Length: 92
Image (cartoon, rainbow, N blue to C red; front, top):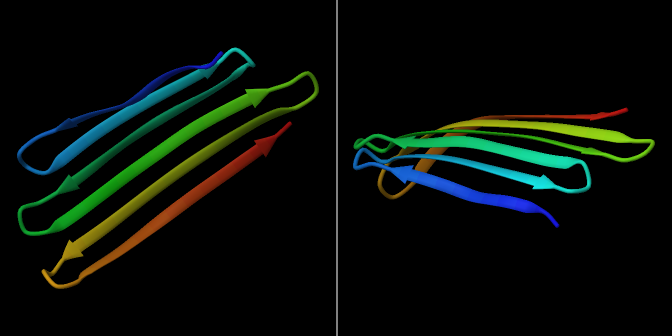
């Protein structure tokens, strides 16, 4: 039976949110998530997210790392953004 803690968010009037989450399973697996989203009053936003997960079996171990960063600008009728993503999977 998996045990999970759902994302816990904390916001403020400045337009920011921070969240975390953790999941632990009885099958030798776990996952941890972290992230933040910031937005200024002028419409500039910054997002940073990441997660790490691992699972094990008798003859196979798998781990995965995910990271994402994004910068956005809201111009009213349209927005513009750029981001980068990194994914690394390891099997042993």
